[in-house]
Length: 287
Image (tube, rainbow, N blue to C red; front, side, top):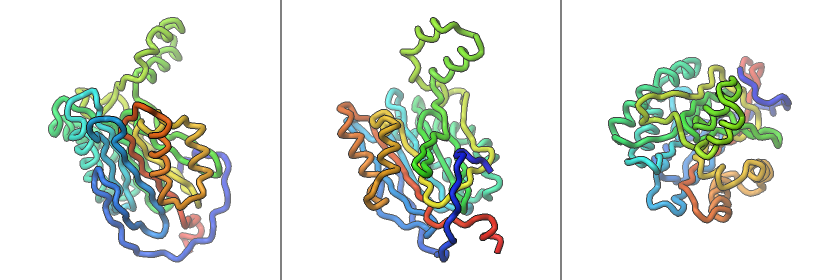
């Protein structure tokens, strides 16, 4: 398994399992819902100061566990709302019946299928995507564009995804000696422009977890559109999530409220938070 954190804490004794109902969070909405006893969730989505909501998000049971997806329709292109919905729908369709061990391959094989679905549903539109499946104590994820997946553990925060933008290309070219530091600085104003997204003629980049991340008790997983991290600086985001003392179910709304307070020109902001409640070790699971 992939381990992003160096420190590890012993997992708590497993709690009694439960077959609680899991109800879908419809795309674009955030009603109350129930999850298995192994997970808690918090969801929020706000329009900001934009004219329409172009984000789509969903939390849904799948054969391997629980799937979560956040997609951000690109406001600079036509049909952003349709594009994000098509991307989210197709992601959920492709992972619905996939066994956990095949998810990395399913992610890789689904990229072109999702891209075709977005191109068909929203000609001229585009969307980012960050999707994840939690299967027991394993986390699988993929992303295209600049929506992000963060993991919080023991006060630490790690961003598991990269932004597929022009800045990403510039850094690679600088590292390889293909451009000079002066050329790099000259091009930086264009750094935020996406170079890989669903709806593009060619999908250039995607992040896929080729091995699952091993989850531990009290880990928090955050999937979000860029409206969140562009409004709340990462150090502050880390402090809020790791230090929040209210009910976990209210944390997502607290974050979107904070984003709205901090930023006058607010983008659509959508996020899904998942917290691991009861976490079995491999030895416990084998008993």
